[in-house]
Amino acid sequence: MKELVIWGCGGHAREVKHLCDILNLEVVGFLDERIEMKGKVIDEVPVLGDLVDISSLKDKIKVVCASVGDPYLKKKFVMKTINAGFKISDTLIHPLVYISRKNTLGIGSIICEGAILTTNISVGDFVTINRGSNISHDNIINDYVTISPGVNIAGNVIVEEGAYIGIGSSIREKTSIGAWAVIGGGAFVKNNVPAKTMYAGVPAKLKKFLQ
Image (cartoon, rainbow, N blue to C red; front, side, top):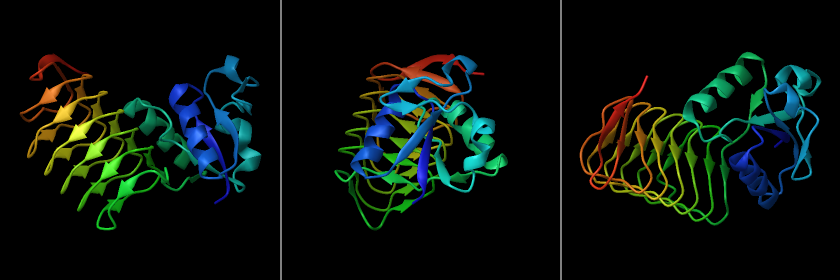
């Protein structure tokens, strides 16, 4: 793998940098659209600016895009990176992840320490599966999904594109989470969740419709 540059420089991006260290992958910098962040040094890594600022590195690096938690921002960075002609990083998997060989993984995803993915699971592109998440059999996790730490997803669940599953929440078997929906932290989802809605609570109930 080529040297890596990581989108973002907040908490999740720094955790991705930590994962890269464990995988013995060299991170040469963070990316940030905010002009005032360019030139700062975070966790001993420089903020290089935006993609235009590293055009000379285009053939020397790969870019990590699933390094922000917000699915909308993640997709924005993916499209921006591809349109600028940069290469996307491979999927990064912590060595302390249990993952069956019967699962399929897309590109550019991040699977963090302690996650368990059992069998016949499909993980799309640019998915974030955070620490200690438990993903059961026959699930479909679509592109740009973010699964927060400590989430439990039972079997035969479909999580549509761009959904955000909050920390410590649980999803009942044979349910679906609609595209770009948000599940609040600690929720228990027992019924299907429509697209672009926010559900929270135990059991999870509709809190609001999202734009």
